[in-house]
Image 1: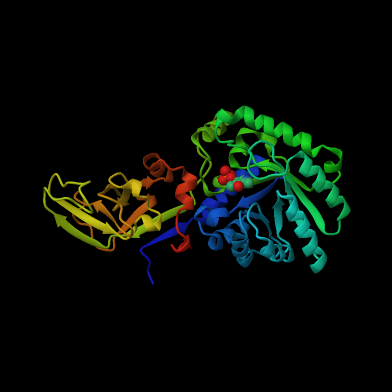
Image 2: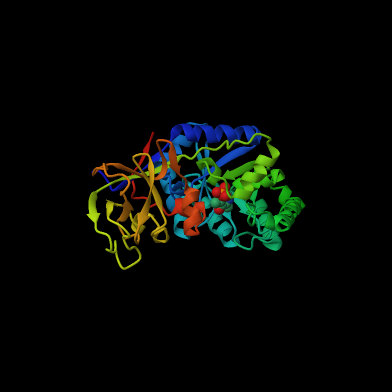
Length: 382
Ligand SMILES: *Cc1c(COP(=O)(O)O)cnc(C)c1O
C-alpha cells in the first residue's frame, strides 16, 4: 500500500549529529537519547536502531507505552528510562523489564518496594527533585524521607540517578531562575543522607541547557531536539555560535516529509478555491491536490501560507488546509503530472523547506510541528 505521504529518516544526518554531540560533551558524559512523542515524530521503531548504530545505549521516554515500543526494537543491553507516566498496574512490567524510572512521588517508592519484594528484582530509580520548575519532583522534606526509606530497602531500590529538569534553558530570560535551580539541586544532592545514596548519574540538562549552561551537563545529558538536527531555539544556536568561532551549523535535519500530486485541474479567474472564500483566483490557475491535511499533521494555520516544493520549485498552498488534502498553486509549473513528488519538509533540488519555515507561519515551535506528525505515516530510512 502506498500511503498519502511518507517520512524519510536520513542515517547520515543521525551520524553527523551524534558525532557532534559526542565531541562537544566529551566521553565522561553519558548521552541519553530522548525519544518521547514517538521520537519527536521521527518514529520510535525506526529511529531507535539508527541511534544505537551510533553507539548510544540509553533512551529516555515519557510513558510506559513509549518504553514498550523502545523495548521491542532495542538491543539487549540498551537501557530505557521513563521520565513520566506509569500507572501502578504497569510498574510491575517496568521493574520486571529492568527499566529505569523517575520517582517524583513518595507513593511510587512504596509501590516499587512491594513489587520488588514480590518479583525479587530491584527497581532502578532516578529521584527527581523539585528545584523550581514546579512540575514533578520531590521537595526537600520528601527527598529526605525518600532517602531514609531507600537506605532501609537497599535490596529493593537501586538508585541509578538523581535529577531535575530546568525551566526553559532555551531562553536567556530564564537565566536567573535556572542558576537558582542549579544551586538548589547541588545543595539538595549534597545533603548527607542523599549523597550517601551514591547515585550513579546526576543529571539536569536537556539540549538547550547543555549548550547554555555547561555545568548542567553533570554525568548524563537527556538530549532531545538536537539529535534530530534542530536547535532548541534561535537563542541556543546563537549561544553555540558565539562560543565557536566558525559560522556553520554542525547539525543536520534527519527528517523529510513527502507526498504526491493526486489530481490537477484548471480554475477560471474569479472562482473561489477550496472551502469558503479565503482564496479568490485573480487569474486563470492550475491547481494540484495533495493528499495531506490537518489530520496528517499539516496544520490548518498553514492555509494560504504554507509552501511546498514541486519540480525543484517553491509553490504556495492556496485556500484552507482540509482534513485530508491541501491545494497547491501549479500555475507556474504547467508540466506537472499526477504522481509528481511534493516535499512538505525537506530538500528537492536546490531548495528546501525547513521545519522552522513552518513555525514562523503557524506560531508553533519546532517541537510541536514534529510531535504532531501522526504515527500512522510510514517512516523509511535512507
Ligand atoms: C523532553 C525532555 C528532555 C529533552 O528536551 P530537549 O529540549 O528536546 O533536549 C529532557 N528532559 C526531560 C525531563 C524532558 O521532558
